[in-house]
Image (cartoon, rainbow, N blue to C red; front, side, top):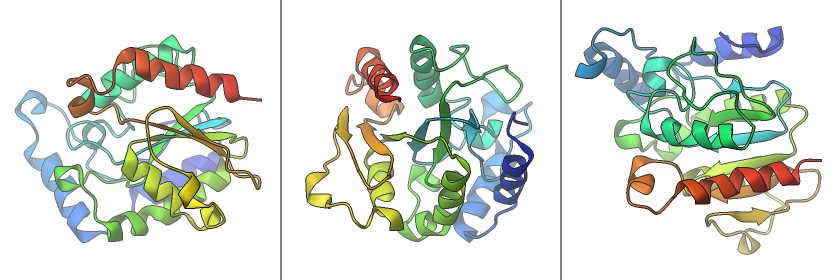
Length: 229
């Protein structure tokens, strides 16, 4: 399913077997069973969605959770929904992806210097995981970070991802008063921690209303690229 080394492939298999959150397990499987009419002929993934991208990534993209009929259908982060339709063209324009369109796991998409994951690996009802569900998923993120040994920075998509990152145990030393969420806001965490760059989430709610434009999103990836050492 990926170009990851064996240790990361094994980690993916552990994630996809997780059934820790009963509400999310029930929802993701119900969606996969009932399906959306446009996708009735497709087999839904219906499991936790592992991270995706360059195993030697220097930048991590952290989103909220899989979309019910996007990643929960395709089994790959940001693939098959409106958010991905906005994200991948921007990564392509920045030279961080080999193509602009993401449809499924077999579409040939390759990322350069980028890995994509989420704070919650299962599609939540109304796109709103509970705090308990986010906490349940935290060990997967921490384990994933330990495997991404070249990481220099994190792009946080949306305020929930932003807040959840700052709640991680190794961020306890950060003075939260000096860190505020906003689009294209940069923070140098120090103490060997990755730098942080926050962005509005590329949800349809933000992109269709003009809160997040293609030019604004392109600035994020240009800036992230410029920060790499």
